[in-house]
Image 1: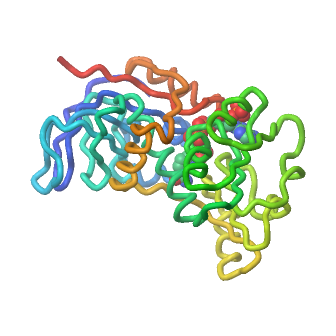
Image 2: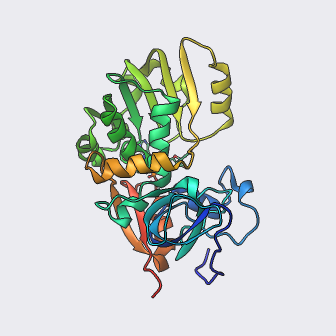
Amino acid sequence: MRAGERPAPVPRGDQVLIQVHAASVNPRDWLLVEDRYVFAVLAGRLPLVLGSDVAGRVIGLGPRAAGFALGDPVLAMQTIRGRFGGFAEQVAISARAVAHKPVGLSFEHAAGIGVAGLTALQALRDDAKLQRGEHVLVVGASGGVGSFAVQLATWMGARVTGVCSGANAELAERLGCRAVLDYTQGDFRESVGDADVVFDTIGRERLASVRPCLRPGGRYVSTVPSARNTLDQLRSLGSSKARSRTVLCRPRSADLRQLAELASEGQIEVLIDSVHTLEDTAAALLRSRTKRARGKIVIRVVPAA
Ligand SMILES: NC(=O)c1ccc[n+]([C@@H]2O[C@H](COP(=O)([O-])OP(=O)(O)OC[C@H]3O[C@@H](n4cnc5c(N)ncnc54)[C@H](OP(=O)(O)O)[C@@H]3O)[C@@H](O)[C@H]2O)c1
């Protein structure tokens, strides 16, 4: 991985060209560098500019880009099919994955929403079909996805138990966890037996391993695609006992907008672990690779003069 000059992107079709003010890191960025990203084949040829999540201002519009005007502040998520490109001064992204940024939200906080916020929202709402009053166990409560999940589940009216290390217990409580289980001090699965949903943002579990935590009819949702989770998903189709799902984050403009509004209203907090410069992107990826990030790792991109 290295920093360098690339030709400026040209917005085509429904794409919006964004002058990036800030971006944020996801594990997929360093997994790609290490050639361990499950969907890497979709990225096409190297060189590839990394980075899915950005916030910035609209500086160009493709011929079919609707709903945006030059100068609009926006946040967006670029997919692997779009060949990422967020860790750069400019990126072109389909308008369907771009949303207006509320005035009260900084570019850095807006950039932190993207993949992690969308994954948490879509997992709880669409995959787990979380209902008010239900009990959710969020495994990995302090990470990018987990910190959004705890807050969104609380906002949806659920009771949340978080699993994280003791060092992050206070943080998890602040985010909304009614109880926190320290996975370094024993098997968290022995402490919960009434969860309606287990949301596993770490991917070490599977339906069979968390079944003792779930009520009959409970749902297990993982963020990590694997052959065994796919098999469990197929096996649990139509089962009244418990279901297994793997969330696959979809870049939806309306969801980005909802998350940004919740953040600007103070209903949820975009938790920022650290802020790096664009030149320091490698350090930002290394921080993510430690798997100790508390919330989102942000890259500040100084707009070109
Ligand atoms: N399917 C999708 O569309 C999708 C979307 C986004 C992410 N993902 C995947 O989901 C995973 C999480 O992503 P992320 O952005 O949330 O990662 P992240 O921000 O890097 O997660 C870091 C957090 O993980 C916690 N953690 C590490 N080991 C743990 C364990 N054994 N038990 C509980 N917590 C643990 C750490 O807390 P402690 O320091 O307290 O341990 C830290 O706060 C990644 O594998 C990513 O690739 C998938």
